[in-house]
Image (cartoon, rainbow, N blue to C red; front, side, top):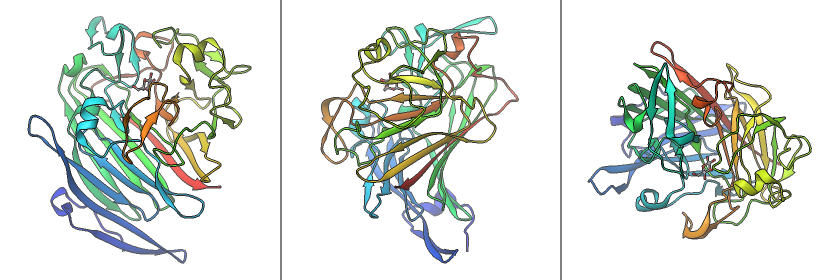
Length: 381
Ligand code: BGC
């Protein structure tokens, strides 16, 4: 019934389909394989890989580990791509605001691009005002990843691997990274991150999918309802660096402990909203760091009925309302993306943790394994 691992050679364009019968339902599990997506200026070829669990179809690029498409059914069984992206590699290279990207070595900002570890100062590239954002100007989102498809029991997926050399983007240590996307029969898209190092370093990996549960290119997500299990968040300064304080969401526009439409407080004259041009904040998840993924957020689109539930092992999530999309380019479906046309929920350790001793540590040492998991479960209402 279930197939074992399929090596990269076996993948090719060959279509592997296993019809599995479980509890009276037939579920189509398929690793559809890869196609050429584009060629970089230096001649490097980028592939697009497709996997499906019969409900969700996921397309991932070897370039940047980008989630290029995420097809999900609505309450009537109609499928739409709920992830903003591009149909052309050149768009990813020239102006992608990290659409769907695998983010590393460090998600979000490190103040001044500087940190000190075990008495040694490290300088990273500064690519966002005075700060380092998402691992620097050539972070993991701009690298070519090895991709291996697999089926395991009723699951199917893609394992992405890369060795980040010592000193890449200023980070110490050779980092061996594996990011595994799994589509499960239960309708979930799971991401497991692991990394090891040969020198003490800092690591904070995440995925930067911009979701629109009504379908990319369909307009704003202001009507989507969001719930985040966080009583506190990390307020930021004018460069979007955490002040170090953990503030209560109570009585503020950042209170998402009960479901709330994104648009309701998006234009509130509240200093944190003004500074970030909308929501762009790290929420301190009530559950903290956990060994197993625990539920932390739910987003519902009343129009399509699509529901996204997120569980994670991570202590934080960056809720970002695509504040910097300005209508200057079109996406996969050829329609222009504007401010508020998507939301991100980037599960993570807190921004600037290497400079904030009171935040959960992001230090990884030789002999340890960095291990985090985030599970996105799609349903309908
Ligand atoms: C950051 C935003 C940034 C966006 C795209 C988010 O993770 O918090 O400030 O604009 O990524 O780069």
